[in-house]
Length: 397
Image (cartoon, rainbow, N blue to C red; front, top):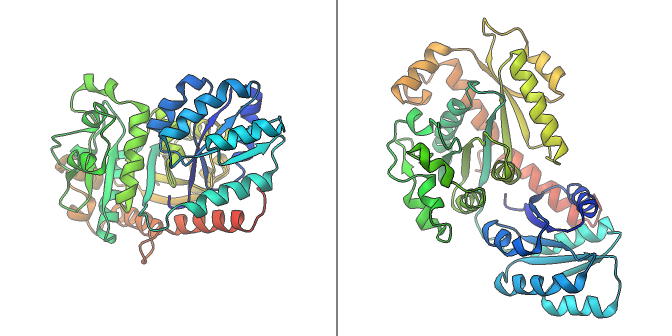
């Protein structure tokens, strides 16, 4: 996510919010982390979510909201604040700039001006900071093998890269990543969420347990009662910290599409959607795709993985899935339940117990396609070039 730009929007006008969202989502690489409607909640959102830009709609009453924005700027020196308003009053603009607002954009917003403003934020950021890729693995239905793919993909990537790889279990109640890798976590996601003000890398690192492959695991809570302590904002903060010192962060889930789940999907560089060639699963996948499109998800980041191909129970082909869902199939994995169940019951990755199986080679191929020999994902490199070329060329969306 090295060149992605993460934005929090503040607007009290729903119609204006829709228009602003539409303009932002046209700029590739822009990710809207949250849309805040109440100014009183702004400080909390900025504190808990890793944003680069705060975009504020000053209308309909700029004088009431500017003092709140000023307080946010004072306590968040690295946050670039953009203001938009129908007003062109010189005193208003001057007052906004004195508060520390970086850009003042009059309505209707010129798309080229918006792109150039975002470009300036990108150019101001340090190029030396390490930033890895976040890959989320989402199952279109329960039982399609998303957790199995997640655990084995993390192991395969750990074997390919010199940097660190961490896998995070976002099934807060019944997640099985730690079980599939046979690790016994002492600390979990719930422990980190119990003290959200202490999310420094060294604190997060203490909660990770290392697998023999080199991959590290952030487990779901140990007790069911702790699942409710996992907050959306803290989860996003944990991911933002993890990508700063991992080459890859792989998440199993989210399995819920609440505020936290949508935020993780927004942060993701790649979303692997696991689908089984069965009619109910494909219908669920279509619902997921429709929902994500409605919320402005860039489908260049969504990769369809067809699991259990040629299963005796399946009635659909890979081409059927492509036709039904309107997305190319990124990868296919064979139906090999005996091998998969053996790995699951032993708590061993396929790399260890069945390195030459077609299933293992299929997951290894997914890892290779996500990662290039120079240590950078093909997907991430293309994504980066697209954003840089677009905004530094001065073009609009």
